[in-house]
Image (tube, rainbow, N blue to C red):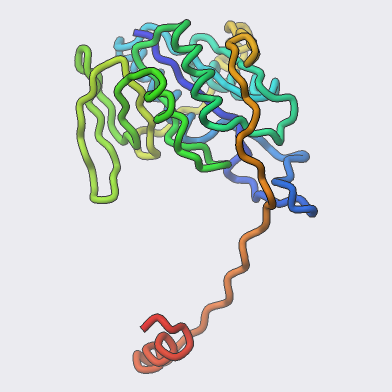
Length: 253
C-alpha cells in the first residue's frame, strides 16, 4: 500500500505572528517557516505504517511556492521515500485556498493511486480544516477526521476520532482520507545522517498548470488586525464581592 501525505509550509509555531503596518496581511519577512505541526504527525504515522509492514511507500506532496522544497526535504529526512512539489504561487503571501489544493491533490492521487491519504486536520496559519474533507468528496472516498488512533485491518481502517462528546471509533473502507489530530503520535526528529540522505531522495517539481487546475483565489482579505489586548484581571477579597462584580460590572449574572 502506498501512503500519500500532503504537507504545508507555515510560520513556525514558536514564532510570534505580527501583522503588517498597513493591515494587508501577516509579515513574513525574515520569519522562520516550518512544516505544519499536524502534517508532521501525519508524516510520522505514515512512516510508522511502513515500519510496521503495512505500507510499501510514503510519498509527501506540497502545494505552494518553490520554498516548500525545504518542507518536503524535512518529510524526506523523517523517512518519506519521495516527494512531489506543485508550484502554484510565486509570492509567499499568496495562500492557496483549500478547494484548489484539494483539486491538485486529487490529480496527484489519480496518478499515484495510494491506498491511504494522511492529512493534518488543519493548518495553523488559516485554520481552514477543509482540504481533507474536500479531497474525500472529490475522490468519492470514505473519510475519517480528527484521528487520535489509527489501525489498518485488511481493506479497512479503524479510526478513533476526537469529538466534542469524547471519543468515537469508526471503521471505514479503503482507500480513504484520514485527517490526524495532535494526540495520534509524537513526530520524530530527523537525524543528521537522514537529513543528508534526504538531499538525494527524488523530489519531482510540477505546476498547477500541469494538472489543469485554476488556483485563482475566490476570497480576498479585506483587512488583517491584531486581536484586542485583554484587560488586566483583578483580585477580590470575598465571594460576595465576586458575585457583585460579575453582576454589576461584567453583566454575566
